[in-house]
Amino acid sequence: MNAHNSTIGTLAGERLDRREFVATLLDRAPEALVVTGLGSPSYDVFAAGERDRNFYLWGAMGAAVPTGLGLALARPDESVVVITGDGEQLMGIGALGSVAVKAPKNLTIVVLDNGHFGETGMQRSHSSLGADLAGIASSFGIARTERVRDIADVDHVAQIVTAREGTTFVQVFIEQTEPPRALPPRDGTAVKNKFRAALGLDTF
Amino acid sequence: MNSTVSAPGWQKSVFDVLREGDVKQIAYVPDAGHSYAIQAAIADPGIEDVVLTTEEEGVGVVSGAWLGGQRAVLLMQSSGVGNCVNMFSLLEMCKFPFLTLVTMRGEYAEFNPWQIPMGSTTQQALEIMGITVFRVDDPDQVGEVVSAAFDQAFLAGERVAVLLGQRLIGRKKWERK
Figure 1 (cartoon, each protein chain N blue to C red):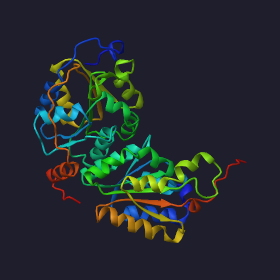
Figure 2: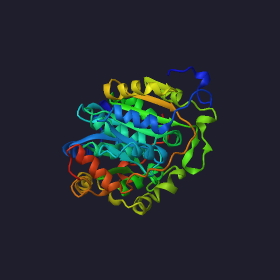
Figure 3: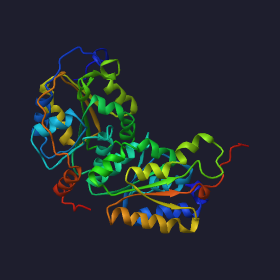
Figure 4: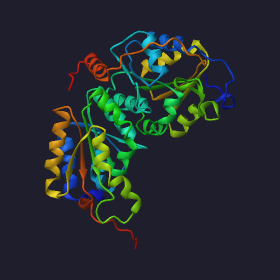
């Protein structure tokens, strides 16, 4: 954690199993409200077990962090976690600037970074071509950024999520693997309604 | 807030509808026609003002707000509608109540031709993505039309845009003295 910039954005260093990291994080932060970016992060979160407090994106690439921002501002009493990938985050990279301005204490952004666009055939992304996502988040003004290369740090990330003490951007260096697909529900309206019901809210 | 003192009454009526409707988040990319609402949101401790780097972020922000039980509204200029097109699929797929207020460019006494391609197709772009479009050009009707759109969004759960005609905003002064 807190690696020096010299190792960031390269394939150097240890990389984690994405499913193990996500499952362990959600096990340690069971009450968190979770928004997932399209593609593998949605599958990772669903594979860890369906929860009413999950909101899965299957499209709208770039929407994960903005959706998490609106949710975090609406529910300061809850921990909100965005779990997305490097490609999805890159498409909505400016949203990190909008997050930095509002800086909701209860928002944690977790980017599962394998440096590739996994869903479309594992083409290299900017993250493995020189971009430093945690550095970008920091430069936008997000006060706290973490770089995770050790599965033991998952407890620390869970503590950040549950403490709600400041917006945090977490870049998790994951292996370039494609675990078995675990497909969450694609009916967005049903997912939305279930999510709201878990918060005691009507459909509209 | 000095500059809001002289803001046209129609701009104030927009914000009044939002505040009375219990809107808790106002997400925006600035435009002169939204200047009163933006400044009033910043000044109101009960409303979160969310400045965006691009309008499509606002589609996510207002959806997230609704997931958490709050009403939120997106303010933008007509060019921003084009930036949002794919992001509007989030609204359609999840049937989020949605209200956006769009100040128009490229349609009336426009000086800048670069505003015309998007300004002339703003309504169509919204409609092809499943958003109902209201329009107002008469300053005395702004409050009524925005209120009607508000109810359709948050009482009927629809996706609604209000186009605020360029004639409301008036001719832009291009010469600085």
